[in-house]
Image 1 (tube, rainbow, N blue to C red):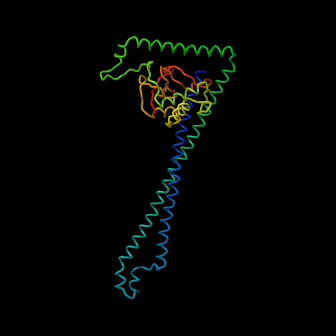
Image 2: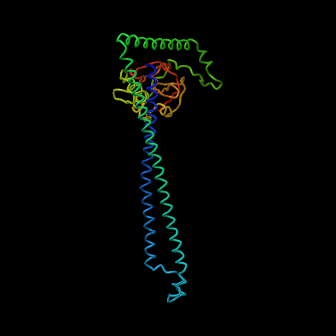
Image 3: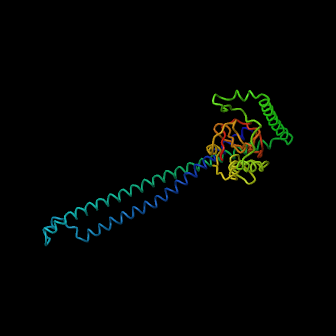
Length: 324
């Protein structure tokens, strides 16, 4: 069940990443469509200008300038306007060049749009593949659960809770040891006086600030809601869906995937964590929770489980950020 849960969270992360890529491609396609419309108008305008000049030339007879000179009533006066004819010829060449240039630009924009369409198709196929992988893993997990007797389920759940409780007690002992031995904190500091350690955050976290308080309050209010892949509320969540909606309460817009969320705001070390910070796990990143203080996070855990609190280091730490 744990392995299948990890597969689902990783596939869900890839699913959200593909969704973000699809949104970007859709935006580029929209820009390309707008550019095509404008370029078609430019081509039409250039073509109309050239056609108008061609019609005017035809109406003047289009006779060779030498013959016109011989037939003109005033050859000297006619030759005085030869520079005008040259200008007309140059203008005609420029018009042809303009039409050619605008047409080539149009073809290039269309080629770009075709490439984006191909990317969209590939991403949509990737999304469907990830969806199928998620649903397959969930179905396998459900089969495993169906084979368990209720007594076995309760025993396994109790074992999981005991492991979490033991880890929380261990963290508490470590915090008490640090509090009883101030020199440990001094040894963790470099020559510049900055904390360079990667120790777990201690129990003296400051209370959440205004924005962070709204984030923590929202996330904590969802405790007990079931995990559901791809869900972002209001009654079911996946990990990045919960963090996205929690930070929205503070007016901060986060992307959908956890690997993108880590790039929002300021990166912080584990020892610098404050309530409201986002904490990321695994490599590549595929899970995220919200730090609530005292070495704890709240997070949408995994398939078959619920939104709950747990130790900040219950999973392999990958990084942390402070969005606002």
